[in-house]
Amino acid sequence: MPLENSIWKSNPFGPEALRLDGRISVVTGGAQGLGRATALALARFGSDVAICDRDEEGMASCRTEIEKLGRRCHIGVLDVREEEAVREFLDGTKQALGSIDVLVNNAGGGFWSPFLDVRPKGEQALIRENFTSVTAFIRHAVPHMNPGGSIVNITSIEAHRAGPGFAIYSAMKAAVANLTKTLSMELSEKKIRVNCVAPDVISTPGDEVLAGDAEVGLSGVEMSSWPEEGHPDDCAAAVVFLAGNGARFVTGSTIHLDGGNWAAGGWKVREDRRFSL
Image 1: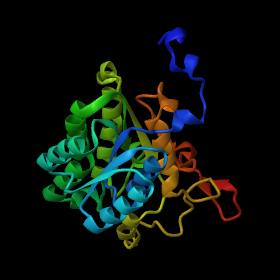
Image 2 (image 1 turned 135 degrees about the vertical axis):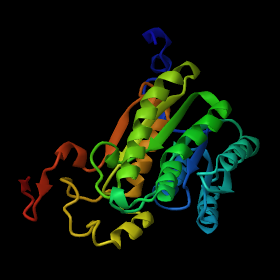
Image 3 (image 1 turned 180 degrees about the vertical axis):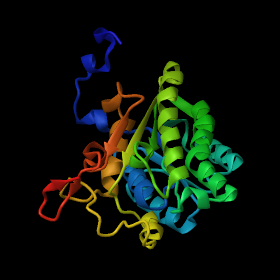
Image 4 (image 1 turned 60 degrees about the horizontal axis):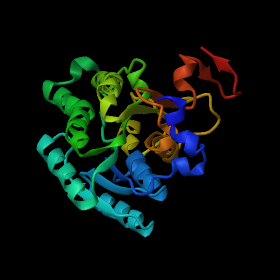
């Protein structure tokens, strides 16, 4: 965009560029963890929010918090693996709140198992939950999206490294990262940006199943070089940035939200805070 046409020429960058007043956001998996934190953060910055999840009680609680912030909230109890349910939810969001400005594909999940022990049914469940759900939401949301919209796909550090015990999950997160790059080009004519946030080292209720499996070994591992743990609000902060005008020139990119783990490339942190391979 020529400088004379840039929004910054008439509105130099300031705090208002991060505001989302008047915008409509959709967050999948919004009942708990990263999705809940993201939905609430979007509302705090001025957006009305639609959330979906299978956890009806968790969504009702999240909606109460959003409405306390003075924002509207539309909810849908659904399985993101069911495309017709996705379409109906997004159509309902348009009717209840208006055209969509922000889509956050957060829902996903997995289980620990060596690849050779994963049965076809389990493999299909992982593909549908972590990849097909993303394509379905994008396919049915884009016709309802305003120009200047933003799609944020929550992937994982496992999209960028090996995932022993999580082979299909990791492969699907890598697929979403690649899809993001492609759609950043295909949707550019609609002025819709597409980016990823790739978290690691952020404890959420969904980690409890993994932590209970001794073979996963999540406990007792030096998680990152950063001296603090990640928090769901760290993910929410990245999404808020990507949703707003402050990220108007960012598309096809990934924010690595992992305390330096991806950059470490195998280096570990010892108890004395020294590094070793």
